[in-house]
Image 1 (cartoon, rainbow, N blue to C red):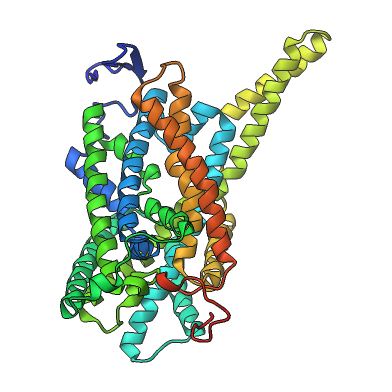
Image 2 (image 1 turned 45 degrees about the vertical axis):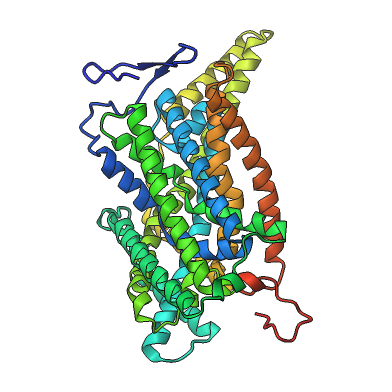
Length: 494
């Protein structure tokens, strides 16, 4: 593919198989000064935004479905994420858009953008809740280490409340430019934690040479464990909303360079996730908890630095999640209004095209057309200070309440990953790609997109049902004992 970087015009890409020209309308201009990221820096930026609190549940996923199955799920999720990111960028290049919602709108209309915004808002509410649960677990363990005492459930909630109160002023900010490097701090913290886990895992298995062969489980005998585990793994790779901003900043954004960025980022994440999941599982085996940090003693100095860094990252990262969540919540009513307005305009035009009453219907159509023009100019009104404050307070209070009652972070990640995660990562990108490429005939990418669409739709339904079903059962945060048997006196109900 060639890109005209002198006099900007739509780019024509020619397929080697069919020699059918594909017109691309890349924004911003490939020669734009806004494109400042090199191939390596773009790959690292994508890696830094992918890696987050979700990695703490990877050992739990491995312990639930088995070591071999967990490795297979990680490789499968990596391949699907790689392909999904590429076809999403391909859709953006063909539609001249720069955001996830705009791609959906061009492909399926205004209602699709409304759905994407609603999914994004719900998804970010779940993520904020999960971040709060992780904050509670990590910071409570730090308090236990400092006070040398075990905290009760209510004291853990009080620790979380303090974290929310501290971060709430930052949640009110409209520009979090000063926190832009937080993802890099999180990346370094995860690396430090990984090194500590590898070290502890090696020591544990070295002390007892038979520990591995006596405790390792390669595959789970319960197929429902796989339905619960795969969303946890797939969610760790979720980066579709960040991908288009990475693409917009990439210098000389040829398809080859774009593929290199995606391959490097997903490849690096795959290696790190495999190391994280395997080392965590080999440390605790069937006793692995849904937050691997809970398996380590709060006074463990080897893990302490990574624990503290990740805790600070999660606290600082909460405002960065709340900001787009609030924006999605406030813009959603305007998008719904615009969608309804366009529906009325289309209905008036269809009525006018039927003829009949002449002037009366034509006048109505003209009114609809004028309204449509107003709809095109419809802008999002800047919310008042009161609306801004109350919407932020609503998000913080709702997520804090949910985090206080959710027994563990794996429940949130599983529901979030199996429903909205599947939609965002796989269903919407593949559906948009198939919509844009429907006249191109069959080729390997279209066949792969169909396979991913069908697999993700079935998986979304099956995994969501399984995740919701598990929520109805008593909970214990240990992989080998997820369901608490009420008839067993040796097991402790929550």
